[in-house]
Structures are given as structure tokens and as C-alpha cells.
Length: 116
Image (cartoon, rainbow, N blue to C red; front, side, top):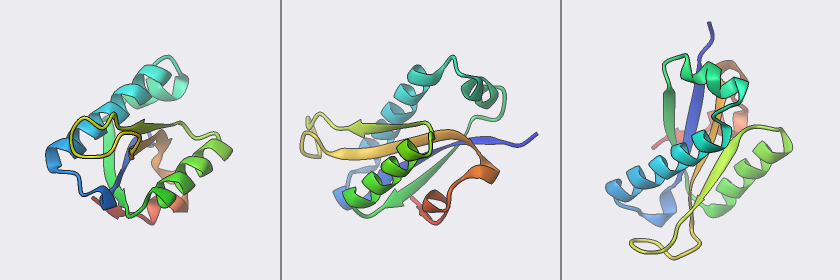
């Protein structure tokens, strides 16, 4: 059986600390899960290994390009926008969670990214 994966795409240009990145990734997965818990794809994901891969982009524009691609191609995603209480300005787009998506169906726009 092929594996479903969630991708967490982090903005590297914000220079967030490790703890901030971890918290933002948690927000991304939590909201993605809540929004899609009762979908067939999420049930299949939850019956597997719950794989997550953390990737990075260098700019907000790169993150926007990926979220627009997901929107246009009906790929599940959630964009975290920070409240600005700690390390980044309010309204900063910090992490984009994408999926779950079959490993074999990951678009090039995501598969070409480097690990965080």
C-alpha cells in the first residue's frame, strides 16, 4: 500500500528559532487535521505511518507559489499566519502544510525543495 505524507514547508528567511519552527509546524498539522479529519484521504493517512516531511523555502513568494499551486490543483493545504507575539511580525506566513498526498503524486514544485 502506498504511503500518504504531509509536507511542512517552512520559510527559512524569517530566521525563526527551532522552538518557534516546531510550534508553527504543530499549528500547521493541527489545523490541517481539524479541517480534513473526516475526509477519505485523511482516514487513509491516519491508517498508515503518519509520515511528515519538513522542507524549506527562502521567501514568502515561494510559499505563495506553492499554496496557489495547491489551490489550483485541489491539493489539501493549510497556511499558518503568525500572530506576531514572539519572533516574527504579525501577519507573517510561516509554514505551509500540504497533504496528505500520495508519495508518488507529490508535484515537482514540492519534491524539488530541500529538507529543513
